[in-house]
Length: 279
Image 1 (cartoon, rainbow, N blue to C red):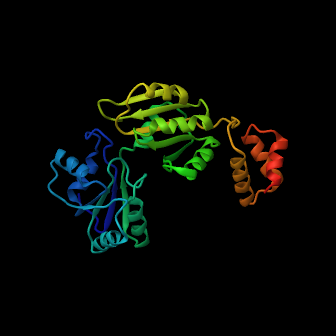
Image 2: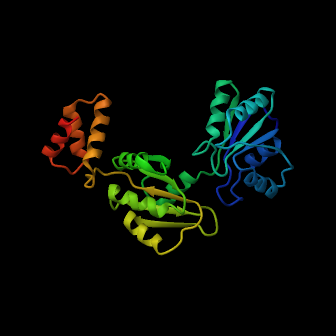
Image 3: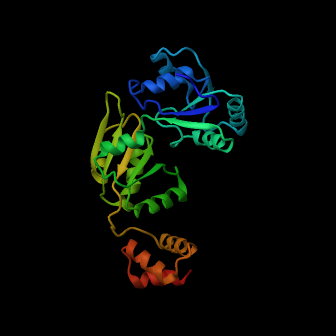
């Protein structure tokens, strides 16, 4: 296969089972001049599995500075070909690879995708929940007000939600989601493509009860059905005020903002009006 020079290949790699590779991926990894890897140990395992000779591997992760990006771009400008790989799955999805892709676009460096596994899409399909309209959320903010605001924002969306979380924090996350999202259908998918692959299905409350009695191990993805217009019954006056201000700041009239808030929250109209008059 004759390679095009000055090309960045965005390569999806296995999310678990190393057998999930394409002939094209192996060919590209053999022929590129260098590999840009989020985790050099993971890519070395894949190279060893398919007997790909030692390659020039550059580490590139979320803590890499702008100098590293500039160095990579300079190599590509000189005519080098490179394969961009994340720790697993598709690069740039909850992954710093998007920065390199963005710089290549600015520099008119040719980029193309070598398709393959994606944890988000695998989990979505395995969940059995609607796939016609979905939202990739990734990891929520870990703590504080931003986390609470994100959960409030997600609670009103009609799309199937795809959320990443650590197995050590998944119980806490579901516990925080239940008061806002209620007993929506969901699926907790773990260890995809591996021998212990598992899909824990049910509503959020049922899933929480199931995982409380055991230790969850391995990578997990939480899939949750979208809002069907359920009214939010648990909230604070501060939350109502913040959401109202957010609508007004988007140019929505006070009258329409009141209608929107009433359609979202199980709140007395007079109480809502009283809160709005304080703004």
